Amino acid sequence: MSGSESRFPKSLIEFQGRFASESACAEYLFERRWPEGFVCPGCSEGRAWLLKTKAFTYECAGCGRQTSVTAGTIMHASKLPLTIWFWAAFLMATHSNGISALQLQSQLGLGSYRTAWMLCAKLRRAMVNPEREPLSGVVEADETIIPFRTKNDPIVVPAGRSGVGKMLVAGAVEVDGGTPRRARLKVIEGFGKDEIHAFVLGAVAPNTRLVTDDWPSYNDIPDIKHKAITVGPMAAHIALPWIHRLFSNLKRWGLGVYHGLRRTNLQHYLDEFVFRFNRRRTRHAAFDTLLGIGARTAPVPYQVLIRKAA
Ligand SMILES: [Zn+2]
Image 1 (cartoon, helix red, strand yellow):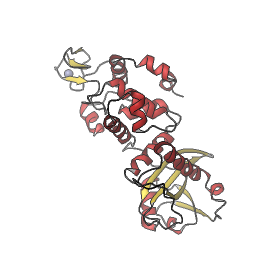
Image 2: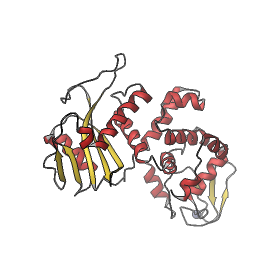
Image 3: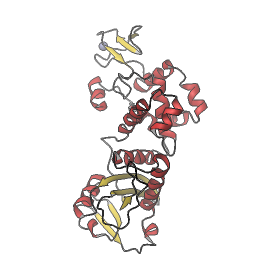
Image 4: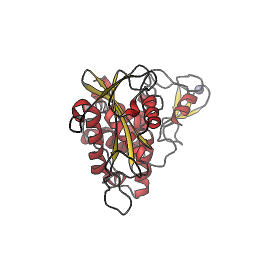
């Protein structure tokens, strides 16, 4: 556990005490952004004035440039208080099952469902790091069919491997010394060779040792060391334990949190599930990532911050 992880609030009470006001939130952002003290992104000057007319905005004493503590984060230009953003990110990062817009609305006392939904949607968009590293080493991969519901129907549970009119998901889990590390999940159109190859090549690094069942679509993927295991239907969870556990957790999560996943935005829900799985031991990092705060050891030019936020 890193130092900042151990200092991160462990309970709702602790969190509430630490981030009780707008200025406490702004101070946290300031410390994450300028751990060595203010540095002007324009001219690298270290002296600045806190403006009285604009919230949490500093004016450089050297060049006069104004920089907000929220610039480059998902909170920038939002009308919601920082305390609401912080609470929403904390709940989303620390709830082991995540939280729906409806739950968020009632927990934070938000005036409208629309606001809660937008908040959730923005936080969810922040869950995929575009520069994330592909899985490597030993990786289990498999595919599954996710039950979904339509607006009026009860939950539909499709059966069999053919995927007409069903939600198909491909998954992969990196396994290191018998312990699962990171995962990937992707909505696919079918279980054919093209879809499976595209998923694997997008999720894993060259020379990965890929372990699958004997479904032929996994054969002959370029630059992959493939091991296919022939398994009966009862033994799949033994041969490929981690990907099977991931799929069953995903299905339970979908039913529990959203009362059945829907076809719309399914990939975003998969991204949320993977985000939480991959950061299950680093809640502090999860919280920062959700708010769009990179852990920066060196000052990053303003233009780079802006590009990162896009
Ligand atoms: Zn300056």
